[in-house]
Length: 103
Image (cartoon, rainbow, N blue to C red; front, side):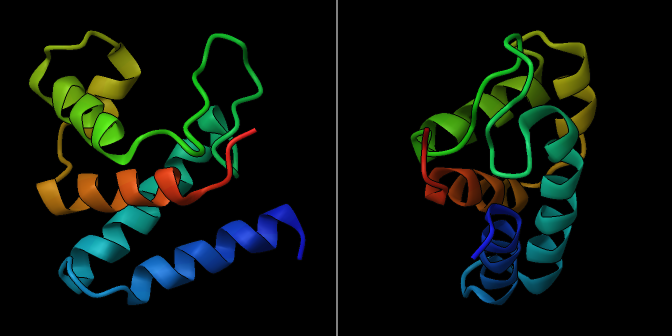
């Protein structure tokens, strides 16, 4: 399976996963697609200034999204990306990236 196909399979699994409401899961998938230009299709950034997200601790990722949304962690793009995320969406996004294999 190609790396891109593996990511799409994980996205599909996320869409079907129990827990978060269906609308939140779908929105999380859409947000993850928006993350790819900076953080890479597999959570591995191409730019040295952008952190890799693949394999990171799930709670850490969730806490960072909350901090960006609250303005406690300053980053213009991440503030914009996170400002309308719900708790369920942030949880789904953190679970997705934590579940990817790190490099």
